[in-house]
Image (cartoon, rainbow, N blue to C red):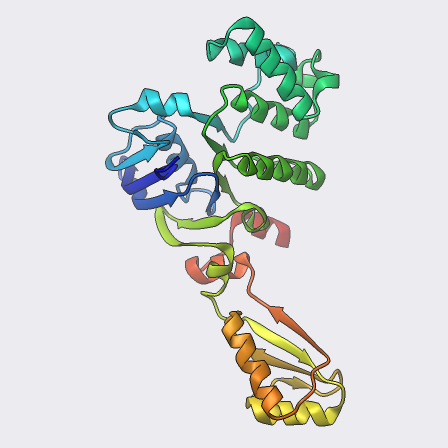
Length: 316
């Protein structure tokens, strides 16, 4: 696509006196993974519901896959897939029959629909349980079937609303691999998540939401550079080298026992090069160097003043 996969300007939505979205602007490039990161109530699901034509915004404009939200909602529905927070599979049908149903809803010819179902069952490693009902599936298997159903219509853009909530770590990583593969094939993915690691692992770009407002956008590395705490950890071969480095770099956070020095940095290559050039000028040898950058939890805390609910749960 020559146009943005998703473009949003000034999106607003209120329910009574509760303003859920307060002027959201987004721009998602084709074939990328874009993450909406925020706690419960931040407005993530409302954005997904609006862009997938399930909810009407109060103000703002949006296009999805080149189709205007206000004038061509049918075009958007034909171009997208949606996997919501809660599984959409029918427990009375087998896994295979759920996919057949989706093929029928997409008006695929019978042979094409059956072939598409078989392909997706194989792709998601569900062939062995195709004849069983989802009630017998594990959480990870149900989520894979849910996503397979989303793909029956071969969408250009996929909305994944907290796709790994409730999954065990192994199932979560399997889902991450599936999402990466979809993006590598050219599909654009907008996902919502409370998991900082998930956004960090998957997203090309991240938008941080808090109480209906967009507080930051950027790549994971760009966001990490916005908060303090980044530093270089340098280890030296002897105490003499450590002392010369401390004088040259004019820092005092040294650890004489381990012969290490901590130097504040923004994590850029230019900052790293400046430190090494200064040490070279003083003929100070360095044994090893490690770059430490703030993680997304630090970013979220710095931007919103609190941590995500998922992080709070892990801390209990």
